[in-house]
Structures are given as structure tokens and as C-alpha cells.
Length: 382
Image (cartoon, rainbow, N blue to C red; front, side, top):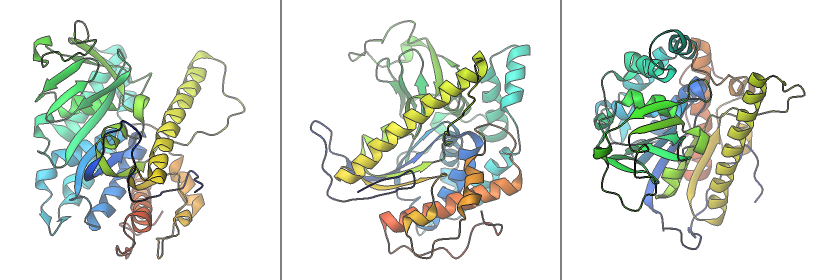
């Protein structure tokens, strides 16, 4: 079966590769990076998943970068969502409204300037902004008990692999594990969204004695267990796929990554050239992860659905899909990857788009019997 950027598939009868652990039954949701564009787009995905009764079915939420802002708030407010008959009654006031209010704040430029001219690092300033506007004094221990387990992913710059933040533990499989971490939720999300090179790295100062006894990890030693330098989770896995893929049978992926196009004048100065190269690396990481996902769907190793901010809703062939003109969708997909103020009209259009494409993917590939939506969350459409 051929695939394009817009494809989302599902197949049954899982067949694993040799040596791969059999996935367990359960649904995992992956929220990609993409700054505020991702943060807001994923709100629309959560909105529709909740209406369809799938939010309550999640066993895991795995996130990176901008997706971790949304996931962090969802996890923090999980106990206040007032689920009734499998539907969260308070998703709008507890999660969507505060994140939309936060999207009126520009924190990247201010954090850079404060990090340059005032004591502390740029990452410290981003952490402070998250703490002030979203997470307060909450720590990883304020996330819900399983299910679902929330996994906030960053990239360990020292070892080159994922550093995973969760309530039961945080770990890097090359360094080791800290059980029941009390790291602030703002710190974890700031590390996950530390876009290189400007907002990266985030420094995590740890007590080496807090690590569990070594179990063969090659870097379970100083300085790796004392000073951990982290970058955006998307550097390693822009879809947040790995921690979900290794455990669960059904994988739902919401991808708000920025599409990279050809540029006849990529720049030759060090700043613009470095940005172009970083964009290429990000694009390749996303492409490889997407290929892994679609190959797994095709082989039957996993089932689920993939949808993207760059998709064409017509390609899903879902009956009674909401109207989403490609030219309007393309405008939303080009919103820059920033932690910068987003006006209400762009927010509402992005939420509507996330809602509509999630609906199309879920009804086409997960359960065709799911009911069609009556309208967009906001009347302006996309």
C-alpha cells in the first residue's frame, strides 16, 4: 500500500520483528513537537478524542517539545477532569482554557534576553515562565497514577539518547534511573522543549546518590549522574514515538511538525546556515520515525492512526468529514515553531484543524462506527 505525507493507516494481526517484545494491549497517544503550533493543534486532537471516548482509554501519553506543554497540563489536571461515562466534563476549563491563555505570552525572546543579561540560564527563564503561567510548584509526583502514564521526553546531550521524565521514575538507559523523582513539572517541560541552539541546553543538577543501584549502565558514574545536560526531545524523537511503540499495540500519533521545503537561498552566514542544517536534521528524524510507524502499521506489528498538521483531510476518505480547505490548512502548517504570542483567531483555527483531522483519522482507521461531529469547536472553521 503506498503512503504519502497525508496517509494514516491501521491493520490488525500484529506480527513483530524477530527479537521484538510482543506489545501489550492498550492505547498510547504521542504528541509531537512544534512550539505553540503543536501545543494548540494538540488541543484540538484532545478535544475530539475526548468526545469519542478515547481520552479515558489511554494507557500512555508520550510527548516531546511543544507537545509536552499540552501533555504536562493534561497530566497535572487529570484528576480534575470529572470523567463521566468515559468523557471528561471539564477538559475545556481545566486544560484548554489555561493553555490558550498561555499562548498569549511570548516567552522565547524574553527568556533569551534575560538569560543573556541577567543571572541564570535561558532554560532557567523558560522554566520560570512555565512555572508562573501553567504549572506552579507542581512536580512529577503531581502527575496521575497509571493509567495513563505521562512520559515527557528530552534528549540527553551527553549520551545522545532519550531522557524520560515520568512519575514512577526518570531515566536514561545509558546512565540509570531515579525513582519517584521530585523534579518540577516546569523543569521537565522546559527540558523537553529546549529548542536548539537558542533554548538548549537545560541543566539538571542531581544527587548521584538518588540513582538506583547500577544495572550495567555504562555511564552510571560521575559526572553523568550529577550534571545532566538536556535538549529538546525532538532532537532524538520528534514524534514522541519510542516510549509508546515499545510497549503498546495501538498507537495514535498527532504530528504538528513544521514541513521543510526547498530553499534556493539557504544562507551562507553561520547563523542562518546552522538553522537550515538543524531544520534538515529535525526533518530527517521525523521522517525516519514516521517510516517506522507506517511500516509497523503495514506489517501488522501495530495498529492505530497518524494525523498531521500538514495532512489533506480529503486523503482520508472519511464520510461527513468537516470542511478543511487545503489552502487554509497550509497557512496553519506554516506557523513558525516559536514560543511566541498567538492571536485568538489563529488559535481557534488550529484547534479546529486538530479536531477535524483527528476525527477523520479516528473514524477512517480506528473505528468507522464512531459518530461524525456536528460542527467545529469554534465557528470560524479553519
